[in-house]
Structure formats: C-alpha cells, structure tokens
Image 1 (cartoon, protein in one colour):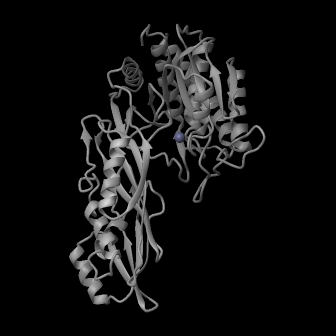
Image 2 (tube, rainbow, N blue to C red):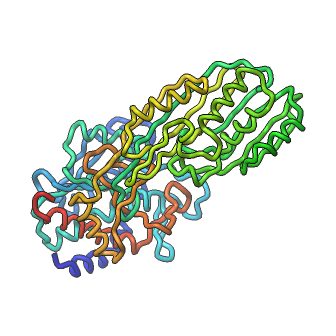
Image 3 (cartoon, rainbow, N blue to C red):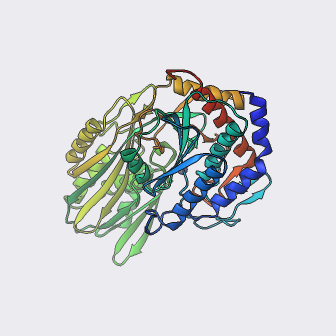
Length: 463
Ligand SMILES: [Zn+2]
C-alpha cells in the first residue's frame, strides 16, 4: 500500500468526515420504545439505515440482521476481519453547552452525543474503507464493518447477530481505548438477603447500582444516644464523613464517601461499608448487630480485594480481583444487598460464586450469585501483534496490551479485542455533557484502521 497516498487522501476528506458524523449525531439513537422493524426504537433504526446508505453510496454492499444490526462488506465472500462498532448512544442528559444532537465544531473538536462513543469511530472506519477502495488498494482477504444498535443496553443486538450470522475469525471494536484491550476480567453479581426484626435499627439505605462504589449511605437508629454514636465514629476511624441529625425520636446517620466504578474500587471511598463498620459497633439488638458484624468481618471497609471473604485472586496478566459491597437496604423486616466482583483469568465464575456464597452464609445471609467468565485473547497472538504494529506505525507511540475490569462490546466473542479510540490523558466526556472527538483524531483513527485492515487482511494465513 502506498501509505502516504492513503493518508493524504484521508486527510483530504476531513470535511466530509465531519459532515457524515454530523448526520449520524442528528439521530437521538438512545433506546426507545420498540416499533415495527425498529426493536430499539425509531431513531436507532433510522441511524442504522443512514449509515448503511452512506456505505452504499461509497460502493459497499450492505445488509441488515433482524433490524438490530447492519453489515457493510468490503469484499465478497467470507471475511477474515470484522470491525464491530455501535450507533446507539446514551441519552443526552443535562449540562450541555452545545446541542447534543447537532454536531458543533469548535477549536478543532467536534461536539455531540456519540461523537466519541461510538459514532466517530464508525465514521473513521467507513472512511478508511472508502480510502482503500477509491485508491484501489488490493486485499487478499475480506473484511466487513458490523454496526450494532444496542451496545449501551446489554448488547442484545450482538447476541442476535451471533445466532444468525458467523462472526469473522478476527474482530476488533473501536469502542474503548488505545492501545489495545486483550483481557477483560470476569464479572460476578451477587444478591443476598436475610430476615431481620430490629427495635433499634429502623432503616438503612446504601447504594443504588451494583456496579458502583456508593458515595452515600444512611441509617436511622433508636434507643442509642448521640454520645454513644459519636464515640463509635471516633473509634471507627473512617475517612468517609458521618453526620448526625434528629429524626423523630431517633437519630439519622449519614455517611458520605467517594463514588467510583466497581472495576476500580480503590479510587473510591465506600460510604456503605463505612456505615456498616460504625453500626456494628453500636449496641444494636440481635440479629441486626450480628448480621452487620458478619458483613463487616467478611467485607471490611477499605478492603477491595475480597481477602477476608476468601475470594482474593490475582495473576500476572489481569491483576487482582476486586470486590465491592455496593448495595444494602433494611426496611424493618429484612436486609437485601448486592456485591460486584471482577475476577482475573486464573479464576472461574463458578469457583468465585461458590466462595462468595459461603462468605455470605457465614455472615448469616442467603445469596444468589452469577456472572460471566473473563475474556482473553493472548497478547502474543499474531492478530494482536499486527494491530499494535499498525497503531505504532501511525502514531509513533508504543503499542501494548492492557487488561481492564470492565467489559467491552467484544466480551465473550472468541478472538475479539478492543482497539481504540480513547487515548490516555484525554477525557472525551463519554456519556456526559459536551462529549467530543478531536477532528484530528477522526482522521488519525481512519489511518490506523486502514493500516490495520491492510496488515491483517494481507498478512497471509494464518494471521
Ligand atoms: Zn460505546
């Protein structure tokens, strides 16, 4: 491939790339009520049709799969390489300076919902394809672009796709970060409960979502003096901040910590486990005191590796298991709570669930745990090496694999890795207000993809 020619051509199409991205951003393609032929709502379907029409205009054959996903094929026949990206978004939310569903270019940045996640990367793939096609770059093996429309709400699009179509042998999704994610930890979600009648603990609420470290938690206790609570707060020595207020004849205790994603709990300060540490030290009645002490013992405040619960695990490639006690409610009759675990490739979901359920049983709770296995593509696989070489050759940066606790669009798809497009040190405000992509990055990503497509498809067998 005449690299300079391809890259110059991509640079010459920057304006067109921004226009196409603006067209895709104009669809508010977050999940909405299903309609005939539009299982995720009209806007997601219209956005898919618009993207496929653009691909057709550029000379690519397209197809749809159950109204849920689309395909734009570079060549006929079974493709070796697939690029999987998505056109659905999360809804705009508040706080935007710019209009969320209208692209605005300001100071080299293009703003709009989906600019980075994942419509911008889609546009870069389409223009990489266009450049290779228009310049007649020959490919020995084929590739296709697969466009989904339900990534943000559980990826049912890809479950459907895999039931009805074959995924290419090698697959990457430009829906995460550079250089390349080859390991995604396994995930366990556990729900636990225990009946409990208490005279002294009136209520407890901490955390709403299982996949986040809770930033706040509160409890109402009666028959315990403010002095007793204050000395217990001193003894607990938590960095989470407690405040007391009168509520009827009882005392409300608020706990404030720092929220974090459950895959990186060490960056947060769990307000709930801090509150549990405090409550179990108070002179509560049984069995509330016993149940809270059990939780404090198995899932202590400030511990994020599951050591006390006996689930700790670590390996060289994926790092340590993380555990977050993220939800706990008490309504006067029973406790109900949730735990999030991300575990390394050396463990299995069944074995972690078994150990976790045993820990919850020791604490006096009945538990139901389940989850997904880790996702791993070896870092020395020729496919991974080829993608990293493409990345380095375009950016001049070192290409290396990274392991994460979260899951990407390719989780569970054999041979799939995440490749781009966020770069460390830049916050593109994905899912937030004023999401953006740099116009330079739109072009650079297209160059990286063109390079990757050619290297993978022309690398000979086996790649
Ligand atoms: Zn995404």
